[in-house]
Length: 303
Ligand SMILES: Nc1nc2c(ncn2[C@@H]2O[C@H](COP(=O)(O)OP(=O)(O)OP(=O)(O)O)[C@@H](O)[C@H]2O)c(=O)[nH]1
Image 1: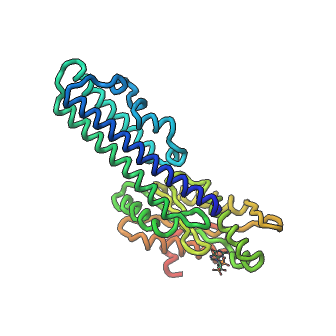
Image 2: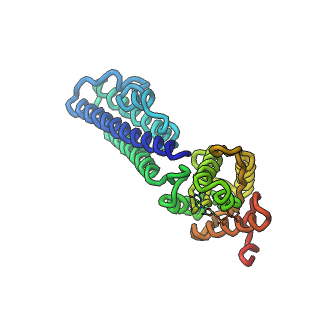
Image 3: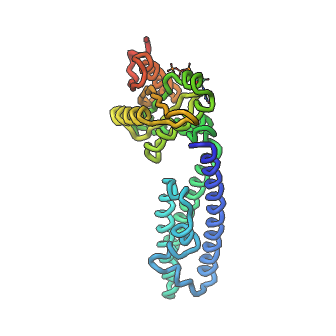
C-alpha cells in the first residue's frame, strides 16, 4: 500500500467513524421514541412492528443503503447486523402487545433491554477496532505497526491457553535487501518493501494480520491455523512474492525473495517466545539458502 493509499484508507476510516457515530445517535433517538410509546401508551409506528423493522429504522437504512465499504469489510459489522435484527424482533413484540391492548411483560422488556445493550456493545467494539486501525498502520507499507501487534498476539495467546484455537506466527524477511538499496537506491528499496507487503496482505484472510516488525522484517499472525495449514500458506506467500515483478522508476522490473520462519503458539508460553521461535526458524531459512520456509522445532534452540 503506497503512502497515498494509506492516507486514503485513513480518511475512509475517519469518515466511517463519523457515520457510525451519526447512525448511533439516530438509533438512540429511535430508542427514545420507542420508550415514549411504551410509557405513554401511544400508537406505535407501523415500521417498528413490520417483519423487516431492522431495515426500516434510521440505523437500518444507513446500514443497508449507505454504510461505506470499509465497514462492510469488517467482521464486526456483520455481527452488528444479527444483533440489530434480534433487538428489533423483540421491540416489535413489545409494541405489538401494546397495539393489541395487552400489557408488556417484564420478561419481554428485559430481553429487549438486554439485546439493545448487546447491540451498543457490538457497535462500540467496532468503533474501538476502527480507532485502533487508524493509529496502528505502518506509513510505508500499510501493514500493522508494532503498536497494536502485541495486543493482537496476546489475545490469540489467551485463546491458545484456553485450548480454543491453534494459532501460528510467521516471521518474514526480504532476502539480500541491502543489495536492493545499494543497487537501486533507498527510494527503490522503499518501493520494494511496500510492494512485497501488499502482495502478502492481499492473499490473507480478513482475520490474519501482517505487522511490520522491523526494517525489512514482517510478522504474520494466523489465528485458528494449525502448523500444516500455516506452512502451506507461508509457501504460497513465498512463491507469489518471488513471482512478483516490482517496477522501479526508469528501470526494468526487479524480483525479490523472502525467507519465512513459522512457529505455533504454545499453551503456557508468552507471546515473545512464539515470536523468538518464528525468528529462529526464519534464521534457519536464511542459513538454508533463503527463499524458503522453515518450521520451528525444539532442536533449533541449540543451533
Ligand atoms: N529502503 C529501505 N531500507 C530499509 C528500511 N529499513 C531497513 N532497511 C535496510 O534493510 C537492509 C537490511 O539489511 P541486512 O540486515 O544486512 O539484511 P539483508 O541484506 O536483507 O540480508 P539477509 O537478511 O541476510 O538476506 C539494510 O540495508 C537497511 O538499511 C526502509 O524502511 N527502507
